[in-house]
Amino acid sequence: MGYRVPLFFGLREPRFISYQLRKEESFVGLWRPILLLAIASMIIAGISAYFGIGSESVSKALTDLSRGEYEAQKTLFASGQILWGLVWSLLAIFIPSLFFWTLLDVEYRKLLIVQLIIFMIFLLEKLISIPINLILGVGVESNIFSFGIIAQALTSIELIIHFFSNITLFKIWAIILIYIYYKNLSEKSPRFLIFTLIGFYVFVAIITALLSYIKFENII
Image 1: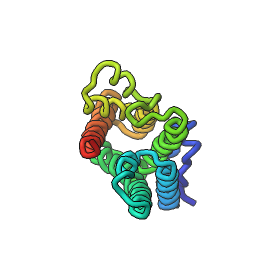
Image 2: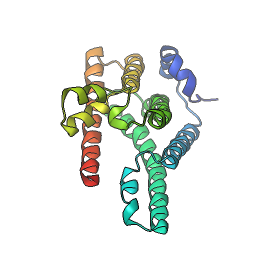
Image 3: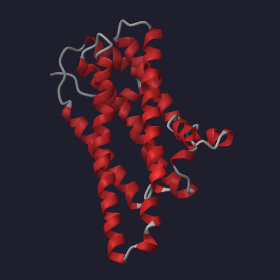
Image 4: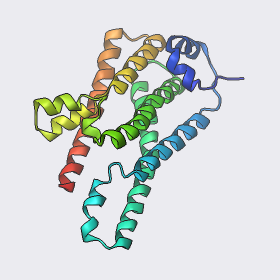
C-alpha cells in the first residue's frame, strides 16, 4: 500500500513515526500534503493581508494616493502576500530537506516527510500571530513568542532586533522535533545533528533579519 504522511500524528508522536519511517520502503501521496500545506499557507497569508498586517507601507502612502490608487495598492499587496505564501511554503519544505539530504545518509523522501510535519508548526505560528497582532497591535519584532521583545529592551539596533524576533518558541519546538526525527533516522552523532540544525536555522534567521532590515529601511 505504501506509507502516507501522518501530519498531525507526526507532531504528537515523533519517535513512533520516525520508527515507521525508518522501516518503510515505499511512500505514496507525497504531493497531496505538499499541496494542502501550500494552499493553507496561501490562505493564512491572505487572511493576514485582509486585516492589513504588514501593510504599513501602503497605509503610509494613503495621503499621497487617490482612493482608486490606494485600493489598487492594497490589492497588489494582498496578491503579493498570497503569492509569497506559496513560494515560502515550497522553500520551507524543500530547501531544508535538500540541505540535510546532502549531509545525512537518509532517503530524501523521508526527510521531506519530516519537513512536512515540521511545516505544520510554522503554519501554526503564522496563524496564531494574526489575532495577537490584531489584539495587541504589535509587529513581528514584538511577537510575544519571540526573543525580539528581550532584544528591544537591550538594544536599539534594528538588525539585532530583527534577528532575535526570528528566534521564537515555535522554531525552538521545531528544532527539537527535527532533532528527534533525525536522531532516529540517521547514524550521525547527536552532537553533529544538533550543531548542524542550530547552524542551519541561525543562518536562516540571519538571512530573514537582513531581508526584514532592508525592507524596514526602504519603508522609512
